[in-house]
Image 1 (cartoon, each protein chain N blue to C red):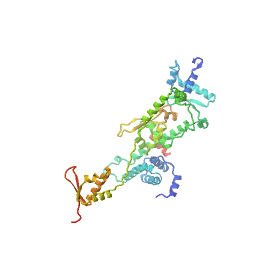
Image 2 (cartoon, rainbow over the protein chains, first blue to last red):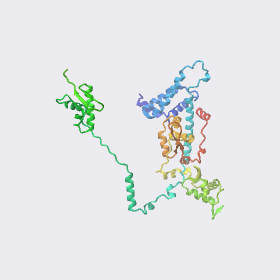
Image 3 (cartoon, rainbow over the protein chains, first blue to last red):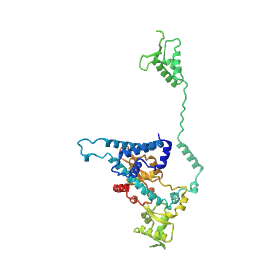
Image 4 (cartoon, rainbow over the protein chains, first blue to last red):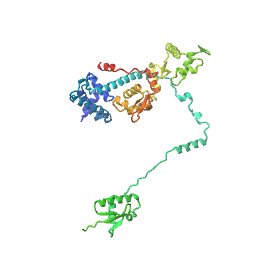
Length: 248
Length: 182
């Protein structure tokens, strides 16, 4: 965990980076590194230190930095592996090559952005003589937009607007007071003096479909705890609910 | 050359003055009968020389493929106040970086911009679209058919460029390395 004091120190000292590649370029410049011979172990460490700090401050940004951190660590791992025996030295590709190409490509555009900035600085001081297009080509003025408007036009417009309005949709969500536990009680008490009855008989006593479903779930629960057994003589046939007698 | 006692320079001046956006040489010639072979550039130079001689506060510049009158930079501090509501905000470094990729690599998709910058470009692209500096130019044929972006006429105008060829040349790799070692 980074202490708040440390964060404050860093916040003052660290320049602002436009992204992970920008940060790498900063390290390379700061340490006067040859871009074709990057000390990957040190750079990775510096990068991870910065990443730790970033994740303490800004998680979204840190995500992009993670990708480059993974790339750095992969390169570092590759460089630690001994070369495959029998392979000529020239044939072995420098694991850093891809990263170097990426950095150079990024730097080209970073410098191009710098040049655009200079141009912007000059241009922003000059004000072109521009009128609004409507002023020139005769957009509606207050006067001509209100001439020849009749009451009928207004009504037509209102009608069209109303017709275009999306229909309001409301969904009422009812809260169900019944619980599965309660319905288990209902199922058991419905036996009364009987030993069995059909689910249809019981379901007839409920007014809402959702209660029937709840009761069905309660039925399954009772079956699982072997307090009742059920049977069905054919597919989609009557469900017969039978009490399991406690006396064995 | 005269037209009812008015010099052709002044007619061109009037047309450029009245035009709401950079007006092309072709369009100017269309407005003046018998001017098919007229060299607008040289007439504009005559006008600009006159403005300079008389100490005027504006010039005619060549921008976005046309001619346009614009105030001189040294009057910025006063003229700027006219446009308080519109605001002339400078682009952020992130926006400029992304914009430079679009400018040099167009048409270009968001994944390409992100792989060059190594960072998410979602918000920046939205800003550039809102400021009308870039626009959607189509879709790439690569998987997912990503949207392609290119620069707009407003981009040329904003940077005072006549066309994309006026962009500073992208540096060669050798120059980039050289700069890094300085």
